[in-house]
Length: 326
Image (cartoon, rainbow, N blue to C red; front, side, top):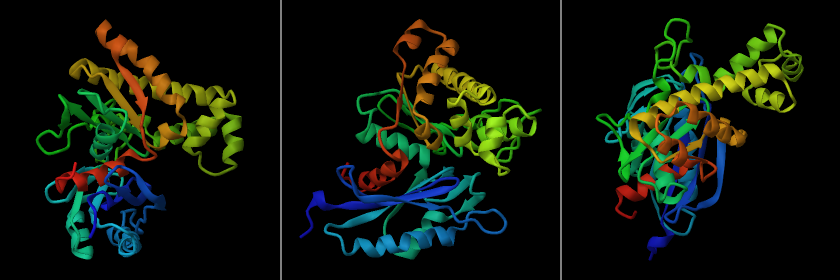
């Protein structure tokens, strides 16, 4: 007979360029390891749902040989997801629009499937098992392939009317001179501060001859985000200017949110943040310039995420919550 404490979930976090997958226990512990896969795209640049689902197959099969019981699949997806139906309403980085992904996964594996936007899942993990366990007012913020977050207000996740609350990365910064965003609009904050924006700015510095070091690192290939951080660490002035501007824009964006919502904590994660932990401290210092009250300036905390991938853990928590176990 299966004991309750032996139950587990299969969790998958589908980002703009990679997908993490693994088993998570009811206690919030990884069973085995988290595997990373590149997100498969078709020739049109659209993420291939069938190939993504095929990545899950071996894990579902493997679950049958594990002690305990697989209770369902939790899906964390980098876009606007209908939490009731599992429909991918708009996922800019995957170029999905109105795709019934949760339903497709359920029909493939005949398991309970629970899907939500990745930032909601991450906030849920931090509130359930992470650094926000004692917080009543906090926001999750991701800086990775995309930029955005989710809200936890008055002791509970705040979903908004459609479950899309927290899209501060798609607030407009400069719709005239800004860049086209995956959401279809121009000049969103995300297009200035996310990983691809950092890489693009580094590439521009190489083309303009402002960074011999970045040029050397790239060796004729496109500049990558991590190169800009490495070049800055080696004293490259162009990279320092790029990252200072990113820090400034994020601080303005999040500072405005603090002024509106009076939060106590921001938990930051995502590939860019995990790759350079001191990035959070730089934003924490800069954000005080854009906050109205002395009380908020003194009391706000910015912390790194608790997990190697908070969204993945939140996807597992979603399974347990829906089944009344958490």
